Image (cartoon, rainbow, N blue to C red; front, side, top):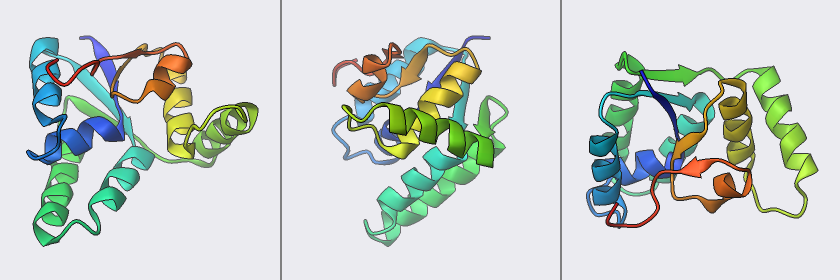
Length: 140
C-alpha cells in the first residue's frame, strides 16, 4: 500500500469545515484511495495547540480527531524521541536561510528515514527540501 506523510496543515484542514483548504484536503484524500498515512507525535502536538484557543467546539473536534488518528490502522504515528528531536534540530540548524519550523524539520527527517516523498500539505517548505506536496491548489 502506498504511504504518504500528513503534515499539520492537512489535519487542520480536515478538522475544520470552514478552513479554506477543507474541501481540497478531502478531495486529495479521496483521490489517493487506499493509502497508509504516516504522521508524528510532534504533528499532533502542533495540531492540538492550533485548536487550543479556537473555542470549545473546535477544541473538542480536534481532540476527537486525534483519538481517531491514533486508533486508525491505516495511520502510523511516529513517537517523539530524543533522536527525532536531534535529527530535526540538525536540519533546523543547517537551514539558517529558511524559515522552517522545528516541527517541519522533524517531519522532513522522519519522511527521509521512512523513504517517503509525498506529503499531505500546502507548506512550500517541503517542496524546498525536494518533497512533493499534494495540496497544490484549493480545488485539488
